[in-house]
Image 1: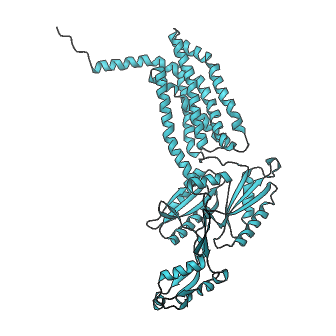
Image 2 (image 1 turned 180 degrees about the horizontal axis):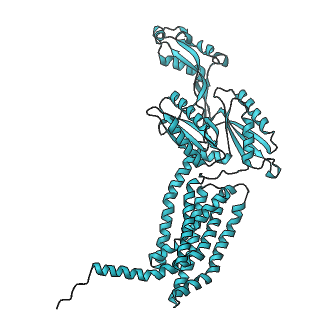
Length: 522
């Protein structure tokens, strides 16, 4: 009997070691990529791109995508107003792609369709783009400010240095397996009129910088001259120069300034008017300037990809003093969620142990029932490997639910064996009778939970990507935990309960030798 127990425990321990050792090789991600039934392609052009040029590029993208038989319709939205979640210039656009039912698709999967669309859109010059989904993009944008799965945020003071280092990081990321839609967040490229003031000429005419600023602001931007009152409503009247007097750098240079002596002097006499390329936007986070390098992942897990990016960026990119990088996007959400689970899961297990101790009144049987947790872990990990799923938040929640059901099966078996021994049965008879009688209740508990999760595990409808890891973990874990509960747990229970009295006797004898009773005094 002892040899059998040792063989069974050895085999189970080997399975557990193999399962736990394989966890670092599982792919990791925050949440599975959700198939929303539609697609969003974010496009970005140079900020200096005019509206007609942007519309022409958008029409070319629509014509290219409409060649795919899976596409039902396309809507392009350029820019976002100031009242939206995040403002966006006319150089950026959101291309919403709606699909026919999948029964009419020629592509076998969404991943295959995206890969084909990527190859087609790549031939259109002058744009950066990334493939996502409407809800996924909005959530990523609202939570982390990064609209892709991984964002490398480069922080520093000098915008030119930031952009140069961001381009170097972009080139590094492009060499890593799985990287797609790699781009640097657009910041430079906006054409603007710059005035280089001649302070000596200003002093010669008796002017100062404020005079030039006020004249340019009134002539180009407009100045409030009056107000229209309509009951409780008030409407400002703003005047500015006509388009022909402010639409070009030469026209701005002909703007007349009034001198203190009553004369008029053209702006070009006291300033050099020129067109330069400047930043469209300067992003900040926590008071630090930053540039974001964005990337999506295709064909591998996000956790492994982010690990490779971190390693290669640290090895190949040298940042000046005062400059540093952080990582955001879904990867940031994944790290935050896993950090919380590293706290929650041990607390849950400790709570279960405490409840078991309160139920059985001793620690040995409480820990005996907790053996079901590693038994269940083996099946849950095996299910992820067999179905090619990554370890994500959904699967982690499945493990927590699985541990509860597995412990419940152990409680059913051990508590009944204890009851039989209280009724007078011997240890061996109580183990045999308990395993026989509790076979059907344990199996019923397992089958009810397993059958309930089967529709979630095999579903292919939109949204099933989130349910599938959770259901697969629960089903796989219940299979192994039930098998091991009915076979291993009775053997371990019988060996532990048989050896416990002798062990306690040896402990008491040792304490007696270490602390002998004092001699009686007459």
